Image (tube, rainbow, N blue to C red):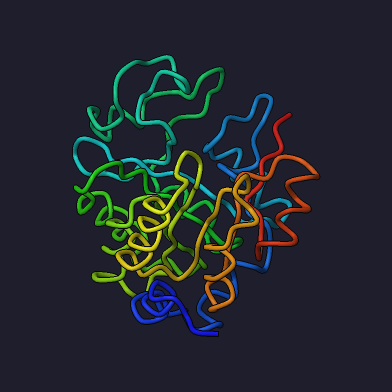
Length: 254
């Protein structure tokens, strides 16, 4: 059977990584924003400590402060997760570090503090929340936090520009492309997925479990790119993940 032009370009422009480079990705599940629930907030030191205690990897999100520091926080706006209002990027690092997570004594953690807490005991997945093409400052802040870190860690993003930044400027750091097909069906959207793959040159994919099985994910996996899947919250999603992915990014909320 002849390969399609997109498949040939996938192999040429987004070749698979060496197997030993990405083996840690499939060695254990990853707790989505840490192991949180109840009195333990998402993306908090307590949530990360809980994941470490059970030997699971940690997925976390990173935003940039106004003065260029990498903070572990999911939303662009402070409102849902804190008692504050406004955008994360509008606050200095000192101001963000003083903000408490809602209903908690936990404060917003800097990425370097989270890495010091984890200290290589479990692998890390660091998702860069980079909504536009201006990714350099956030990528640089994450790279600086990772300098000298001896544990297993990977960066990933929905934004292929951020993935490409690491391919170009820090190729030793394992990098992944986060993908969802929700609302993105049809030929044009398929073409966009391939273009993101070629642009980012990822070592792995982190795929929306709601989209599995996916011909795009299956083709990447067959070529040697590991496929992680998010967010697994129940037994049915776990069974789908077992059939179509290499490891799960899961959430168990009390």
